[in-house]
Length: 66
Image (tube, rainbow, N blue to C red):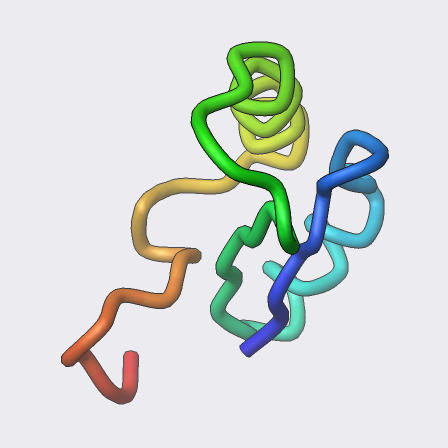
């Protein structure tokens, strides 16, 4: 699993594509940030779309394997 900490910058689309290709699950973290940051959420969504990710590419608590 790769944890993407995007507190200070948008997620790297090329990294997300490489992780998807390697069949590694992804999770996002805002680090120590508190509250909902609309700009960060928008940047995440844009990066997810640009990298061609789907819900199956993300780590889901309680689910193991593929």
